[in-house]
Image (cartoon, rainbow, N blue to C red; front, top):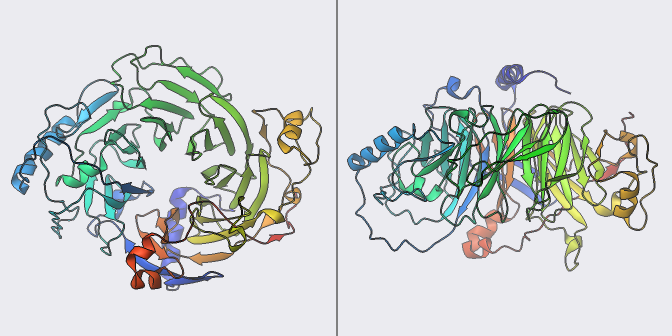
Length: 545
C-alpha cells in the first residue's frame, strides 16, 4: 500500500517514468484487442508548474440537436468584435456580492442584454487558429481541467489539441459535471479550488471565440457560503436544475440553478462533526437551499444512482455512505480496509456500487444486501477511478431479463488500467456481521428483511474480514500512461483513460475499428447494450483480518 503524500508520489512517478519501458499501444482481453485510437492533451506551451497542484478530471458531454432560438440571427462576429465580448466577460467575472451572479453578456438564462453573437470557434493555443465556422451545436466533447483552465476537445476528432479553452483568474477548476437533459441551456457545472461554482452552457462556450466564461451563473462567490475546496459536483438526475456540491470540510450543498440566491445563505453551526445532519435555508429565495453535513474531513467523491433515488459519497474517513436523496436519510455504508476512499460509481441498474481508495483495493457493494459482496486486488497503489462498463454485454445474459454478469474498470496511481468481470453465480453471500448488539444471520429467503432485523437502516459497518468476502482478480492489467491515472470513462466505442497531468487516451474496443471502416452508421447503432454487466474469477482470499 502506498502511504506517501501526493507530492511525493508525483516526484517518484516522474523519476520512474525516465526508466520505464515504452508503453504498448494495445492490450489483449478475452474479447479481443483494445487498440490506442487517439490521444488528447492540453496545449504544449502550458508550463508544468501551472498545473502541478491540480489533478485532471474528465467529463464526457453529449450535445443534442435542439431547435434554434426564434430571435433574429446576428452576423458572425469577427475576432476584433469578439474581443469586446471577452473584455466584457472578464469585467463581469468580478460580478455581484450575492452567492450567485451572472458572468458574460450573451446568454445567461436571465440576461436580457445579450448580443446573440456567434463567432468562429476559438482555439486554446496561439499556434493554431482552429477557426470553425460551421459549428452545428451538437456532438460529443471531452471537458477536462488542467491548471487554471478548462479545455474542451471534440471526442470524434483525431486532433490532439483542444478546440477551446476557458481560463479562470480567481482560482483553479478542479471538478465538473454535464447534464444532457438541461432545459435552459445551462448544462455544465464547474467547481473551483476556492469553493466557487459556475453553471454555464457548453454550446455557448463553443460558439464564443474568447477564453473567458460567457453567460455563466456564479454560486458561492468568493466562498461566501463555504470557502473550502470543491471536490465533486453532480446534477441531480431528474432534478429540474438541482445540483449538489461537495467540499473538503465534509459538507455538501444543494443548489437550484433557477434561484437568484439573493436571500440569507447562512446555516447554523454543525453541532456534531461526526454525525450526519441536514439544515435547510431559512428563506425560500436562498441558494443553496440545504446543507448536508456528511462527515468530519473531506468528501472525496459523490455519485447519484441512475434514477436519482440514491446518492453515494466516499470520504477521507474511509467510509462509503449511501443516502436516500429525497428523504434526506442515510441508508447504509461501511469502511475501507485502510485509509481514505477516493472514488465511487454505480451500476446502471442501481444494484451495485464500486469504491476504490488508499488500500489499493476495489470493493463491490450490494444495495440489496447493504454490504460488501466482493473485493478485488490488483493495483499497486491508490485506486483513483472506477466505472462500470454499461455498454458491455455478456454472452450468457442475452435473452434473459436479469443481469448475471457485470464488467467494470479501475485506474490507479500505479498508471495501470484494470478490467474486471464479476459473475453473480460465483458470489456466495457470507455470514452476516454487524456491530455489537446484533446477531448475524445467513442470507436466505428475503435478504433485505433478514438484514433489517440485525443491522438497522443507517448503520455504518466496519470493514469485514477479508476471509469472509469473495476475492476477485483482474481480467486484464495494462500500463496505459507514464503518470498516475485520475479517471476513466466508457463509451460505446472505447474506454477513455486520463492521467493527473491532463493527457487522455482513447482505447478502441475489439472489432470497433473494422466495424467503423465497413459502415460508420452501423457502428453508431452497435449491438452493445446500454446496461451494466461484469465477470472475474473468484479465488480464495489470501488475507486474514
